[in-house]
Length: 351
Image 1 (tube, helix red, strand yellow):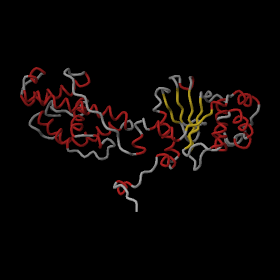
Image 2 (spheres, rainbow, N blue to C red; image 1 turned 90 degrees about the horizontal axis):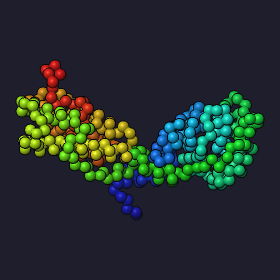
Image 3 (cartoon, rainbow, N blue to C red; image 1 turned 90 degrees about the vertical axis):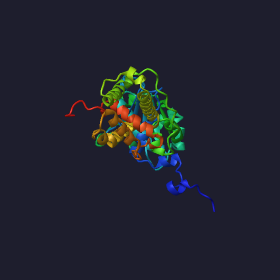
Image 4 (cartoon, helix red, strand yellow; image 1 turned 60 degrees about the horizontal axis):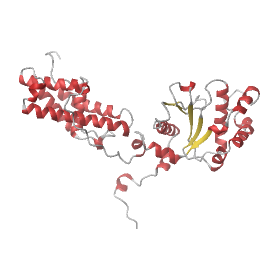
């Protein structure tokens, strides 16, 4: 009998990514393609998903410049079927493109890609490689597949100006994307680990804080100095901190924590969906705010108690939990202090 890895007991046998993709819902498949397209920053300035009823043949539109439809753009048509795409699956989509570009809803795209969750079948692949034959078959199938289906209840014959528009279209604009190439490129996006699991990549080592205080850290540093001053009963500035061994070592420790959290923020931008780090910050705030707003002898005592509690927080619900350390959670407190979401020194008795 074959031996199985222990991970199979907890998680089951891993599901190959193409198979996982094949069981996505239609909405998940469109989202996946949108996520994939968002990685093509060298090709597009904006990606917009407009799938669903009334999309007029556009699922994911990718714009080459900020002129949007007034400039060059590409369309990715997402198809979630239980079989590889066949020619019969795309005639209506070609018909929509012809009709709506003729009626002025949008200009013809530079390229039009079919993306099927189970790939593109051999027959359609062959046709996409022969634009003239694809065009001829689209014309032959217009009455059966497009005429009454583009706008249900409206008869749209391929004649007159619409036929002239059809004839002028270069059908080499139609192409396809394979599931394998979509998955491979998707692996470079922040969405990949959430879609497919497998854990996050190794996190780079955090940079040490520079000697000079950066403008982006001025407010939380000001709060730390206020906390030291509240403890001492006098105003404390940078020179006073430098001349006090206790404060100086503590100050460097706090700045290191802040830079650790900044490193985690930067890491999150490339590895998890937008908003994930901000939710982690909110979770930390929710976990420490009662401690911060409790009774303390002075501002430094409040800061120390808040940071100590932050280090104990269970953040298991965050996708970043496997790469988040105690110092990161404490550094997030300083990020929150930088935005005045946490205050170490109460300004008056009423606050």
